[in-house]
Image 1 (tube, rainbow, N blue to C red):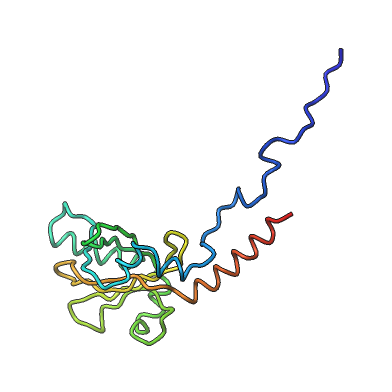
Image 2 (tube, rainbow, N blue to C red; image 1 turned 45 degrees about the horizontal axis):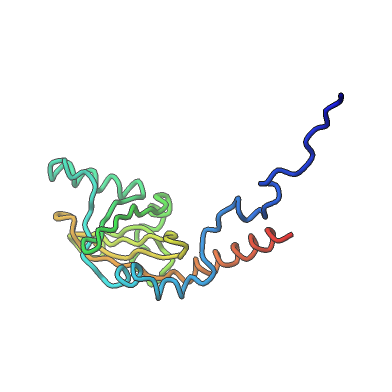
Length: 173
């Protein structure tokens, strides 16, 4: 008796491709940003702290803090909610635009140690819970405490919306 190969499509082959590629953003990012309780809390200026290397001496911690800034990342926590973030930016862009942080260009990400002595000003973009946002704030370079908040990033949201629409269009058979 001759056996025939199983020719029915596998279950996963019948699913639309969208199930295999998770979208980075939700359909209405602004509405989610404005209505989500976590975003509401974090969009107000709140107390923040640097969370890196708490077990080190203050001098060692400050050295590692500045090293992390030069490498393009920093860990912070919103004290009121306990929400932790690791903020990133391109360190090469930082070197090339060292004096451009304090310009009015909101698309600039990175840090500034020049504008306000004793403070480091930081901006970083990322996607959180399907929404394009920007973290904006400052930290005292001695106490590692400061103020920060989340803002809706309109520019990045438009780009991600276009990518999402293209991805959805490709997923439909």
